[in-house]
Image (tube, rainbow, N blue to C red; front, side, top):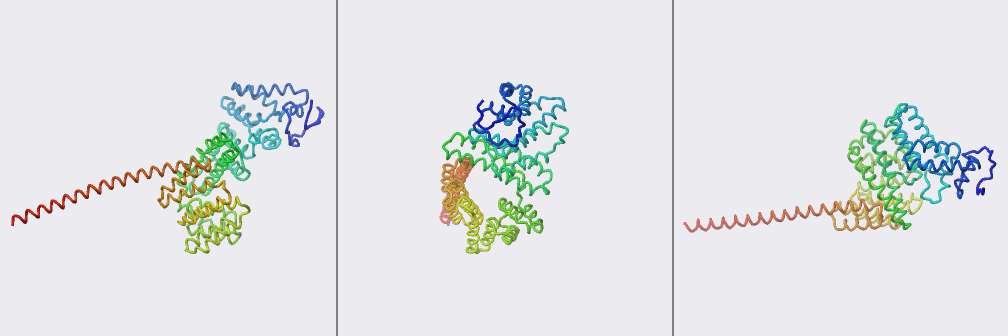
Amino acid sequence: MKNRIFTLAIASVISIAAMAQFEGTTPDERIAATAGEDSISVGRGHISMFQMGLQNQDFKDAYVSWKWLMTYAPFANTGIYKQSPIMFYNLNLKETDPARKEAYFNDMMKMFDLRLSRLDSLNSMERRERLKSSVGDVMAVKAEYYNYIAPTIPSQQWNAGKSYKYFEEAIKTINEKGGREVSGSFLQNYIYISDMIYKSDPTGKREQYLQDYLDSKEACEKMLALATEAAQAGDSAVAQKYVTMYSAPLAFIEQTFAASGAADKEQIIKIYTDKFEAYKTDINKLNASLNLMAQNDCDTEPIYFQYAKAAYALQPTFTSSIGLAQKAMKDGNASSALNYYNKALELASDDNARSKICMNIAKAMASSGAYGKSEEYTEKAIGYNAECAGHAYYQMANNMVRVKNYGDAIAYCDKAAAADITIAPRARDLRGRIVKAQEQLAAANKAAAANKAANDAYQEYLRKKAAEEAFWRGSKK
């Protein structure tokens, strides 16, 4: 058989870790490379039986074939890794014997670890880029299925904290290294578990929950960015798929966090006031704290400025520069504020980063009430990177709402929705709320005008009546 990658004797001992790339190979070639030429027909049969078992929901038969493939031909195809979690879920659901349930669970967790260790090889088998998985993708699926199944395995002694560790590790990997096809349920379950842990200890877990909110929101926005990528590539169907997949989880994250009460300013200020002495020599802690305070409307508080000053003294960064710019703005020192803002731009390494900085400056200026400057920096952001136009217009829409310029706010909502498919749901929602507010205001004004007209008419009636009475009193004299 022609083999484009390997020249192996059937009796060779194969190191799975050493087999890095399988681009261009067929399942038969991969079976031959691991199980031997004489096992091709058997391996091909097991691939077929595994697929049929899943389709027919005959999960025990699928498991038998999966086991053979994982043992003898682990690179036959990617389906034995991607499709097996649902098999294990159903096996566990229907199994009554605790020992068998635990064996299935252990096989599943081992499969995830093997998939992670073999990911480069498995990705090389995919012909289309979008079918390749990232480490974050796999860790996210592992976290979800651990969370589904571990509670049913007595030996696991499951608790929310154990699931949380898997979710946290996955979300941080996605944010640091990227991800594709992360499920919306993973994003929702992460904030759900974090919310559960926070509610068990609001004082002790508040800081963790604040960070989890930012991390889950960031991961969701990274997934929505795939919609922009697809739209730019001309694939509107895939772009809409991403919007549908991730808009609802983003809304769930926002709603869950808002309902939690964790963003209480007094509590956040107290947390970071108490932790300042411990954090003041750690640049990472200082910057993380600044981000958390800024995201929760604490960026005009003295403790925020104290963190910014300490961080800037250790190592000037965008985050600390913005903090000191905010302080200068509050003190009425516009020239000093602009110097710090420009310092933030200097610290950027490329136009994409500068665009993000300009958007952050625009938000900071808006929170300080400097809406003209906010608009200036949104325009600069678009100049550095036209792809941020949707976010820039959405920021301007919010600015216009704050100054009660609803006509321009609606126009910016429309521009934001047209510029970026990922912003469109939020822009349309804001537009709808603005229109509703306008209708309510118009109704209130109409009612007020009607009341004024009625009152004016009544006052005129009283005036005429008083005049008549005065006339008749005068006549009687």
